[in-house]
Image (cartoon, rainbow, N blue to C red; front, side, top):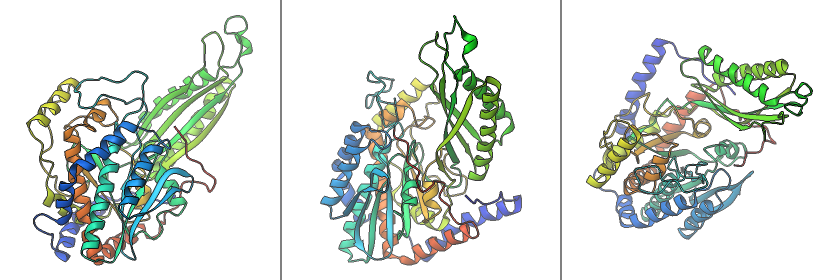
Length: 484
């Protein structure tokens, strides 16, 4: 996969200045609408419906490619709203594409609805109260994400019909974002062909347009194969796969000193044997590598392969590295982000009340972070805003102009991928953030359908950014996603 070379200081400064100016240029070309929009009115009138959608998906709490009830629930809803729905896309049984209208521009909204393993939590509780059994939970708020994307699409399509506008509003139901990078499979299988622009959002602690911080990632299984034996009576006959994994893991820990400051290495042991008195002949760890570009991630991957071979050589075992998924860094699109930023500034941050603030501060107190409450402002647009978490929207952004919105749905300073986010994802403060996201996305979608010149500007920027380095799928033609 091709990626851009790192920019020099002068080029980086020029890019930053250009990025700051582009949203203003987009705003000048199409003045931002003032006051309440019809999509705002509809979404406020139907607020209870969308909160119920979010609650239902929160209750389903299904992990990667197990989101059968969540996907069917959203598919049925969209069909009732007049969307033509294709269920099951390519190799992803819980992916869908729903379209309303016809012709260009085709404006898409991305919906996610997968949960995370082991993050179940009672709703609206400011202490860890997980149900027994370590069941999944929406520790990244994807119940809110999917509900808002669908709500925005329904609202935008109703306004498109009311104004008799040409064009298409489309929803991509994109499963397995957390673990298997479902969007990369959808791109490989042609789902995004014919789409002109895409709008995404994610639950966060602040209100902003995400720009230039997400990292590329590769997830791999590292397996070792040895020979079992009695651990006391004849250990010399065995060759421990767990020893190999432990040695490999130490090598990866030492490698952390010799990677770029932007790099991340995480791991978990998936299988280390069954009982201590049997030398394990099989061990498996899962290793995730991240950095600012997929080129840098691939360099780390080759070093990781060498470390696995070295550990196998030292322990007289055999190593196998299997890449599970790869996602590139996002391609920024300042023109499209400018359209969404205008609507975010018009709509404003969520209107949290005193009860929301009290709950937020109770969570912060429980987690031992500063009691700053909730975000009550919109962050100005500019490069470097957002999170270093990875997402498969990076692949989408390389084939379709994409803007990603963040809206506050959890307290400042608190993490995602944790029980506290699960708690917020079914609390009034989470629902308030979700409705702000829906209002911003719906109005932005109508802006784009109404003014195709905005779409063409965004497409031109993507073409310039990708010139000489066309997107190449990281997946082989026969690759299959990992089911969890």
